[in-house]
Amino acid sequence: MWRRDKLITAEPVFETPRSKLQGKWLWGGVLYHHFGHFQVESTARLWAVKRFRDEIEGVVFTPRDVKNGAEVLAYERDYLQLAVGDLPVKLLSASTEIEALVVPGQGFGLGRIAGGTRVFRRFIDQQFAQDVAPDGPEKLFISRSKQGLGQGGFVGEEVLDRRMHKAGYTVFWPEEHSIGEQVARYKAAQRVVALDGSALHLFAMVARRPQTVAVILRRERIASRSLRQHLHKFMGRKPLVIDALNDTSEAEHGKKRLISALDFDMIGKALKKHDFIEKMEPWGGLTASEVSAD
Image 1 (cartoon, rainbow, N blue to C red):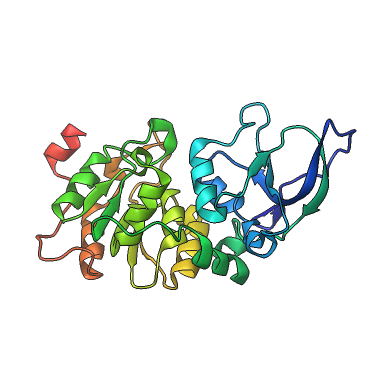
Image 2: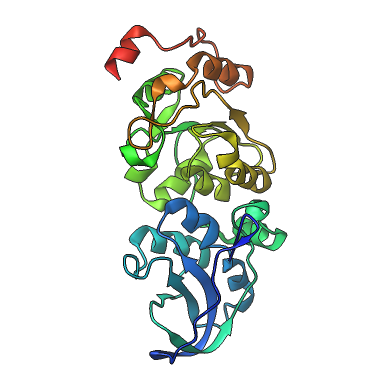
């Protein structure tokens, strides 16, 4: 597996197999439990399912962390079902001899391949979440305010939630909804605003060109480069990127900065200029009450 031009999988250590797996299987690669890495790197070889579905028994993965992750999580099974249907998925945590194995090339990932290969994009466009109907508001703000202190973002992010709600957006916390419900909301939304993060990878999988998305950076620009490339190539248009970080110092609370590190006046002006918000007074900066409350 390649990540940003570096090979991150080591040379294999061959040993006597502990078990055998009969039949022909497709190699899915390494299964990550981190939501973003799971989407970008654990789905990278699934494009070949369309070609080999009638020949294979299912898809096999190895866990990224054998000690703490030797099982397929519930959200991962739901996500994989949207991509490969009811095809069986196996996670092999011990050396296994497989009778026959299809090994597809890596069609997606981080770095230069973040836009996906043409065959991978076609697979996602034609196969992923086809049975999920759009359901939800036209204006959606994807919030990270309920993420823990160790998950990045900002202390006091509820201020941004309130401002987006006042601007006519439905505030949406993805972690409170199933993968299918998230997809339904993302398909229905015509305008999406979000801080850069893993939720936008799922949005990119089902987004279409008529939709517009604004990405408010919560990290230095280079950290979200692969995410922005994913959105661009899969949607067919570039996202609006709002770099309103006015404090580049290290985070003080876990991995989080204070909400005052964002220039709210800049965010409001950018959203209004690009028609994400309409007919409202300029945002201005944080008020004294907002600072004291959060």
